[in-house]
Image 1 (tube, helix red, strand yellow):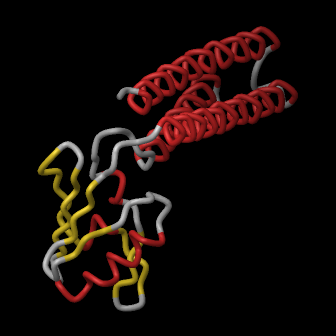
Image 2 (spheres, rainbow, N blue to C red):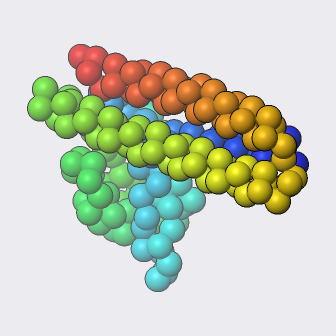
Image 3 (cartoon, one colour):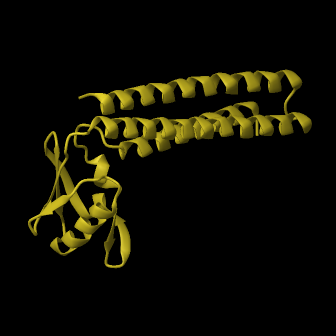
Length: 186
């Protein structure tokens, strides 16, 4: 690998870690309804665990309500069971054709719990980015040892990877602050 390839690999891996972080945060409840809360829930559909988003259309008719309309009405009971098993803490209401989820307002205690979960998930994201830095730095050192990189290039690459890490950690902090503000907003 060349200097530029190592650099591009680090950026790509940090982008993936940030995208994964965004996916994890989508499932955390805020005071507003969001289709992302239920999109990932796995439903038993003819013996296969299938994401709810592939089995039904999910809409938000009101700020605190989610309506799930399955493409196949026979899966309604499976959807209700899957939502009840999930950690959302919302009781589904079904009329045989659609499933309604009415989101109760979050209590102060729930808000703190969800904010702590956001902090935990973001810290995991930072750790995965630091692991990328460690792996890339080890790879750069191996390239220096095999004379593919000079001492100066190796040092410069370490500095650039550290700068890249700081940039991505800043993005994680920004995402964390934004999501926490959404949760704590009354």
